[in-house]
Length: 474
Ligand SMILES: NC(=O)C1=CN([C@@H]2O[C@H](COP(=O)(O)OP(=O)(O)OC[C@H]3O[C@@H](n4cnc5c(N)ncnc54)[C@H](OP(=O)(O)O)[C@@H]3O)[C@@H](O)[C@H]2O)C=CC1
Ligand SMILES: O=C(O)CCC(=O)C(=O)O
Ligand SMILES: [Mg+2]
Image (cartoon, rainbow, N blue to C red; front, top):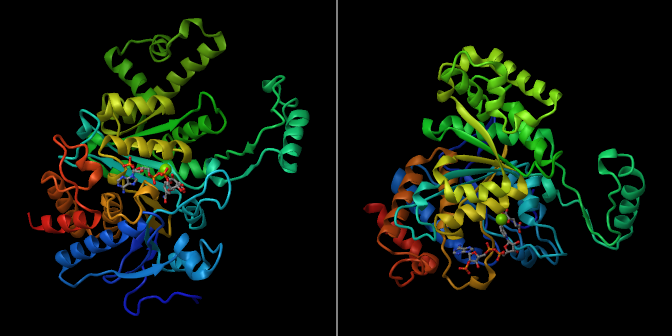
């Protein structure tokens, strides 16, 4: 079955039922070491995960690690340009749950991202990146403890589908000509717009299917959170990209008000209900004026539309959501992407789950991680219905590679997410305890050490792993 790898002789496969993993006590878990700092991060992570599992289950549970290859290491074993061998994708498909270090992607040419390829090949449509503060972690932000968000990023489409054409190629020129002469003139709203002939072209597909399955997962996650965190914010740039990013928002709301009608309320619905609760005699039009700034200067048609919206909401959900019942539901709202970058800094505690498209989520997850201590503390998971791959938010950080200095917290916490996904909560909790203990004791790697006041001497990557294990016993 495999060309150059051999699965461990002991252990069993993780299987899936209705999108949930069924995990044996001795699962075989494929891992990719990763390029760059992967060489430092992986051994530290494996050591901490194994120690926590041993301490929590006394031999009743253990992972049989299965080394598989991608990136530079794969080329060394499989030959030139064999960045993602079939052995690797077969093993991940076969064993269901995997973990990986970062992989390099060249800029402006060369191979397409292996990280993105793995997500697309295995249809891992939800990239889940929690950004949560661990007490004592130094942060550039004044109140980092107020940020506790989980980014749910669509992981398979958007510009990451990689359908683009380089400037000057025959197809790019043909496409521009076709757009300029046929499609743009045939679309009145585009007027006399033209694409410059020396442009590169990229395609940004955002589907209803991809958007709704991501938002569905985000809402299911919200249902598992404490009441005060049951919020989902749809992040988009729909004012500018109306039919891709704007559609993402609309499809999110459509799902909210159909599949999750009983569990959710939208922010706009909550205003309509709240206005009527404060003033039961409020007319439909006065309610419409209160939810729509600038109502008075709208066209009669638009005014009628908003009045209809108010009436529709009251007719549809006053019984089930009115008289304050909506306050017990999951709040679904939306924010424009640029605004959410400032909102998480100025009003961090007002957000919980941020559901995003691929590119926005990529940007936002690095920014949010920075607020709670940096990329060294940013874990992540790529989740599908029959497979999951856990990996940190950051990349290969090449300038630090092989120096045993980067923070393995990000990959270790990705391992914690994996343990939680597997239902091994005791081991996950033990690692979080050890990590918190090490940070509180100022035993940290360079990235956190330099932010501490006064700065402390940094531990090596491997020493930080040992410190986490030591603090299991706190
Ligand atoms: N999923 C993946 O595998 C990803 C891969 N990549 C790829 O990684 C490569 C390098 O990308 P680059 O733009 O440098 O971004 P990186 O995320 O690799 O690194 C940027 C900076 O973040 C900080 N950092 C990253 N990881 C850690 C860590 N574990 N501990 C402490 N600090 C850390 C370092 O900052 P400082 O030096 O200031 O301390 C580092 O220089 C590219 O090829 C990119 O495509 C990028 C993102 C994700
Ligand atoms: O694949 C890459 O090189 C970058 C991916 C990335 O930045 C991410 O997934 O956050
Ligand atoms: Mg990124």
